[in-house]
Length: 81
Image 1 (tube, rainbow, N blue to C red):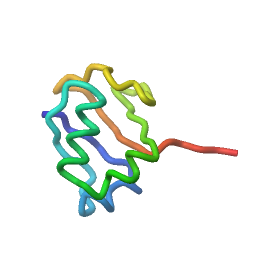
Image 2 (cartoon, helix red, strand yellow):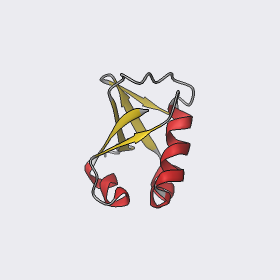
Image 3 (cartoon, rainbow, N blue to C red):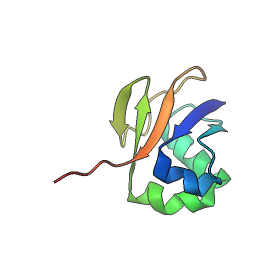
Image 4 (tube, helix red, strand yellow):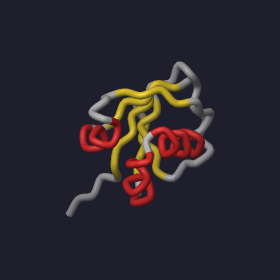
């Protein structure tokens, strides 16, 4: 299991939980597991999310390995102007 910290705006889809545990070995499995456990996250995940893994931010890095002891933070894509 991987502990995933959710960025504030994503917590509404997990009943306010700041952290959830998901069985995953990579970013794609993490997203699939989150959608299965929390279907309300699907629209946001389809719009795009980033993952901070041990302090490094990844976008669309589907097969990036995640270890059970990894620090994982999920956040919406950051946009600026």
